[in-house]
Image (tube, rainbow, N blue to C red; front, side):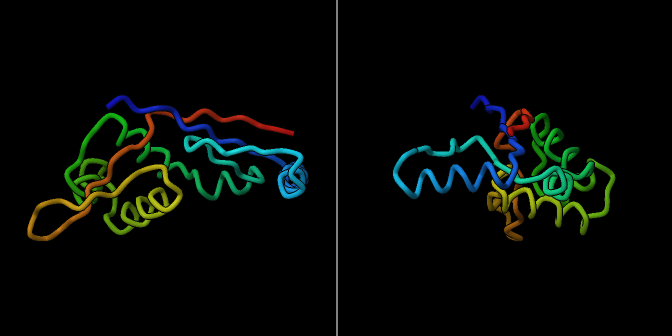
Length: 122
C-alpha cells in the first residue's frame, strides 16, 4: 500500500470562525479531507510536532518495528517517552496502532502517511 502525504494547515482562528459561520448558515459546504489536519496557531503545531515525534513519523514511514518497545530500541530512546509520543500521534490520526498476535498483545505502530506538507493560510 502506497502512503500519501498528510497536509498540515496552520490557519488563523478568525478565518476558521468565518468558515464555520458560513457552513452553519448554509452558504458554504466544505468537507475536510481525511489527509488534512488544520491547526489554529504555530504554537499548536509546535506542541504536537516535537522533534521526537517528527523523528518517529519519518522512522515509521521507512521501517516496520514489531512493537512500540522495538521502536524505542531502534531509536535508542526511553520506552516511556516513545510510548507517550506514539499515543499522541495515534490520537491525532497520524499513525495507527494495531494489536499483534503475540501473547503479550503488544501494539504495532504503523505509519499512515509518507510525508508532511505544511501550509499557512490567512
